Length: 245
Figure 1 (cartoon, rainbow, N blue to C red):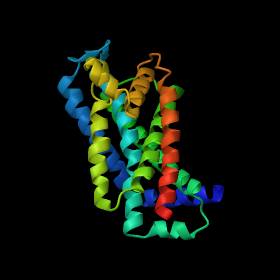
Figure 2: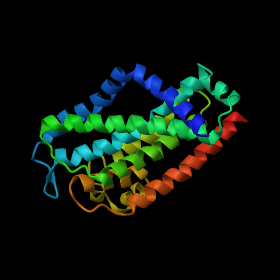
Figure 3: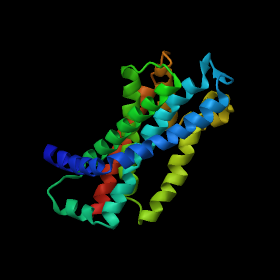
């Protein structure tokens, strides 16, 4: 099983290595635009609990970046399925569903970690000093695990590569803007807070931001994220099994 996981993961890493400069540029452009547009535009005029908006924004960008980059493996999986027929080769190879899903999820998590490093590096010229302790990285890793697993699950369900953009537009994009990335969720009406509390990104954003601002994070985030990730991982296993059948 371990050899199968390594084989799938190394394949994705070799592809990432060939595209590394383009990938890093893509990971940097959106956060940089947000930092310039929101950071400079609002400056110190907007504060949340004594923190500047940039200090509030960067942890949110970390949560959003880890989500979008880990979920982006869905597009590569679909290209491999529909155009390169790579998935058919995996079907013929002695690789279990668990090994395949684990290898793809790990590759998504690796992309997410690269995106986080890029975002934190972009924050340095803006003079933002935050705390990046173990709980910060734990929340980010759990968040990337959730969405990398979701990427594999949904990539197996779509019938064409064009359908993937619909999933991104209806699932990832709304979550990116409503999951506490750019504004505090507790500023919304109570009914909206209850709905957004169901989103894993909301928990990840709150936990990452709390640790970065040297506050005590909500322990529920570190329970919700792994449980959600495991459930979606199981769903991904079943989706791969269905696709193989």
